[in-house]
Image (cartoon, rainbow, N blue to C red):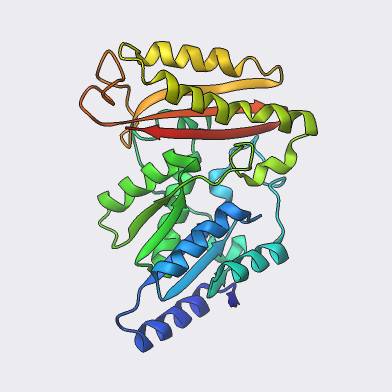
Length: 290
């Protein structure tokens, strides 16, 4: 595996590979580092489906609010490189902030409507930063396919729509959430949890499991389902709910139908999405049904 910190040098290396492999495809996995087995699964899939696999590690300041954890966000470059190499990455792009933003960024990529709810509502400006940095990375790497984990399903929906609206020649590949044996979704922020918080955090995945059971009830509506999930999560004393939402997917709108037994009333998909704080640590999780 080769590591690059320069945009120019990375572009040059990818260009050389494309000249030597005109029929080959480039797979790309953008990350913010502190990699775990969830990231490794994305890299492994990209490796299996493409001739060249590129991974980026960049903690993007544009997607952090003024009171969020940009400086505190965990970083371990050596471990990240080891995870990438073991998972089969060919190129690692690990730029400094000044390489990605040599001047104050005055251009933004905004995706509207899809960002009005969930993390977009509770973290204003977050998805402006996501859209901007992912657009930059797509232009730098120029991949054929890009791989994203569905743990952040709203992010996947935003990037899919951005790519479609801007006619970017990149196939977006959503990948399943990777979980701990007890069901907790893998996250770089899990390291912040105390032992007691970690024990109680499993309530998120269990609540989603219960949601799947409740959705089999033919007369269940979105409001009733949401209420049941909130009550279930509140059984964990340390859990502080940011949001619990039941929406269509990938449009992220309230379901049209009065009941959920047929998706959104028209045979579509439903997402149950959660954001819950344990102390100062905010965790997200979701499941898509239908």
